[in-house]
Image (cartoon, rainbow, N blue to C red; front, side, top):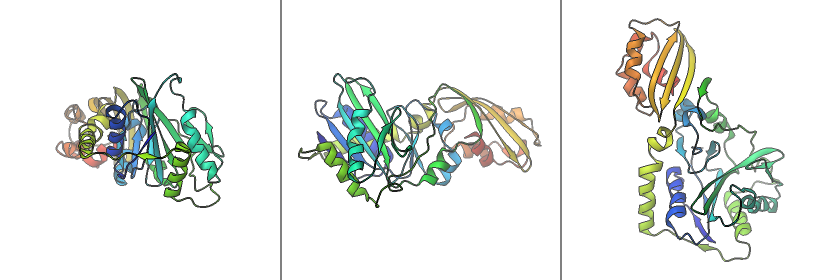
Length: 326
């Protein structure tokens, strides 16, 4: 098995690196990767990003948002979180068998005095609390299995970022199941530092084998960075790939209640209705007709600024309306 460790904390780069190893490196070789991301929300391939995150909290805390190749639920990564990836040939193993890949992680934890176990569909838990979620991507006889492990993650940020504002969604996207979570160091007999944790995992994965570490060539680096720019950094991949969904959201402002009913497809507003007990100078249908066709991206505030929102909804700014919609 070949070992690859990313020195980057950039989530867009790291997910591009995973796909590059899976799709472009020698398919006869098995690979094991360790990597970390900074301050990031990672959504599953089949999820509605807007349905999973509190965009206002994400923006306020300057979090990255990225979609991964595999299914499953939304997770939070920071530098107190360690991610691992196995890329192997599927062979005769059943589809989406998670247990065989988490064994070395559990054994590593036990070697450090932490009693963990595999639980449910795809979790590693300590005393019934989740410390790791796992997911898989299967294609062409190959399996990419990855998991995130919370060694010292900031759980307050997790709660803020994944605490979606009061809203009603109707969509066919896969919803995350919120679990009670903890960190490894909150349950360890002593504080475990990240390098010690990495070494313990490598010891269990490679056993008595020599660790063959692979370093990317300059050509490989260019290919990963191209994939990062053209896919993982794009709004189209991270938000725009959401299928059609309907949403209702409302907020009581000082000047009145504003309710929004909206239909969105691939991140573009296809229909929108705004109602409430607010006051305004213009016909609200004039405003909504101009909003149709806008994208739910970082340009939304600027685009709403051009529409003189306060003329239609007294006391509500373009930024207020954008926060409500997003």
